[in-house]
Length: 72
Image (tube, rainbow, N blue to C red; front, side, top):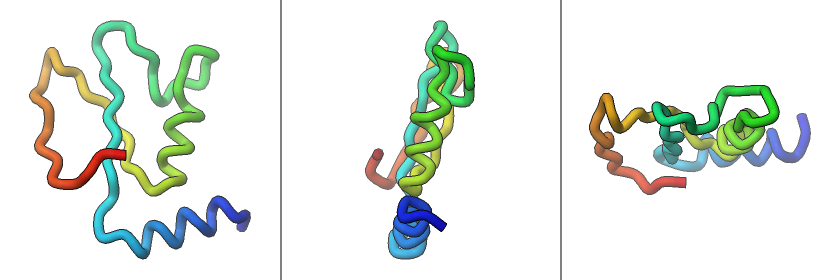
C-alpha cells in the first residue's frame, strides 16, 4: 500500500459523508471514464482516491440533484 492509498483510506473512514463531483454530459464534453487522450479518466481516478464520488449528469435529461453535502 502506498502513501496515497493509505491517505485515501484514512479519509474514507474519518469523514461522515463523501463529496460528490458531477461531470456534465450530452453536448460533446469529455468522458470522465474515457481512456483516450481526450478522456478524463486520470482526473476521475484522482478524485476517487480523494474519497469523492464521481458521477455524470445530463442537464437536458435530468434536474440538478439536491446535494446536502459540499462539493469537492
